[in-house]
Length: 297
Image (cartoon, rainbow, N blue to C red; front, side, top):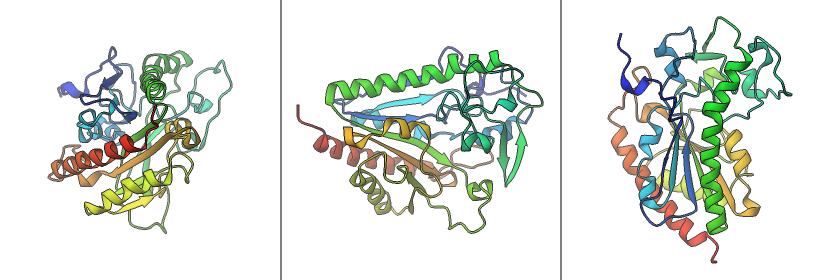
């Protein structure tokens, strides 16, 4: 079967950066998990239809008007299952490797779930399937880091540094979507119903409370249910970027996928356009807040 163009490899464009089209604000939005360009050397053994369940498909499109509000929008083109930009460079399971890694590794909770820097498995309806029937060579993982992970982080860091240098402040939105079976994946049987949106600030450590509540209250005014840090608190990126005491605020936003797409076909559903319109309104609210909150220099 012919692979559609949007699933074809894009080795020369691991990250896309859209600059503000309105007067720039210290506002950076990034979508690290919506990439759909599958590298030719992936070497997975699961069907692509199953593998694609790891994507936050279309998230960068939902927020595509962010630059019109003064934000920089950054999106990975590669899939997170290949290498995950929202993990540390050392979050690797040594059991996945065919040789010794040259530096100390620090596998964390995500790696123990099979969802580290390089994913080991993919889940559907609570059933996990291994991605590989082999161990990966050290050289191929190093290549993924050099050619995909580092360019993404470099682009994001450049946007952050530019905001801090110019404005002395930063507001960062880390953009995601979440599967409807997330609690089954986590083995939770006593969980509440999954909210439409989950806002993560790592238990109040990565952004000012008023910024989180501004976004949560706005989403509720549109009719969505909102949860805070349940079941997602945020991982590598907001933990590293968010330093509220330095006026650097970082918030993770998760959207329940059935609101805007069919989880099996990955195609947008009837809710896509209304959701995008609401997110456009939200960006207007955020831009106004940032404009008023940023330091006067």
